Length: 408
Image 1: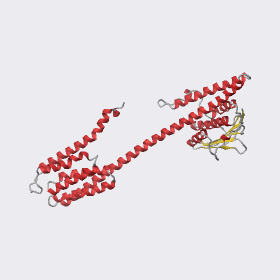
Image 2: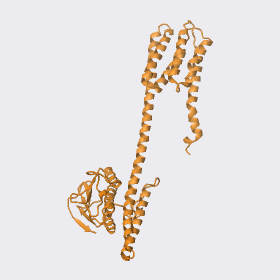
Image 3: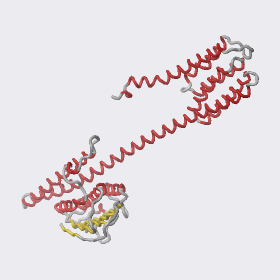
Image 4: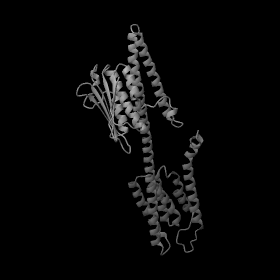
């Protein structure tokens, strides 16, 4: 447990303000009483000091203990007793600090419209006291108390605005932290969906095939079960990689330390093979000169293709599918099309470019992170298509076009 979070420290922080206010009020009363007692008055400008003067000073300064809890009430109380003190003609300087302290507190804790009125009232009381100044000093005293009142009000109002800004900044930081947590949860959910949905779909299809041909075609059933095992192992490996990245402590693992190759377009042929074994023949066409993509963009492109092929397995089993990857100078364009064989009505989005499920939503979220776009919908010639266009920041790009086509 941190020292600042210890219950004893919390209790200390709770009593510190009260202790500070008590010390301030008692100290102010002591200093003003001492000054009143020791101030010489050979010419008899002020009323003789008596017990009432000290009682009035106590009534002025002791309530300052509550000035933060009841700032306006304390200012009204202080102004009342200071006005009476001035009216009775006691030495005036020792009472002025009480009004100024109460005014500063109102300005620092109350809205400006309230503190401005309080400043006008406090200034009126202080100006009333300047009549007690020595002959010839009254104009200077009036200027002094006016400047002092303005300074106290400005300082208090500045403290209030600083407190408001600090509170707003703290709220904004809390909101930013909350949004970061939500975004991280969405990212984790999206990654889990992409990792699990594809492999589970492949396992489900292959398991069904193995069960169907187990007695009639043992080699095919054995091959299907091998695919199930491979998909399960790959799902576990990807889950392990994701958990390593999501660890709160420790550095990110180096690529050679990770369990298996990292997902990216470099594994597109392997993905096509695995989907082909699930009953969906996939052809891969790569146009342009391939180059290394930034890791985030590479993973994004791979996941979009993976999700598109997973949708084909789910909604159009047996449909012939083509994955086209075009490496441009400053962008990568990917298109996944199936011929519509075995397509179900649920596969078609509600409207043009609409999304038919969480997978398509996840595609768009991934692409948006890297300023890319994803479109999905029925293809003009039948079937269904998913397109990804994502910009790639790189110093230059090649224009050479070499076409490599493989069919599964």
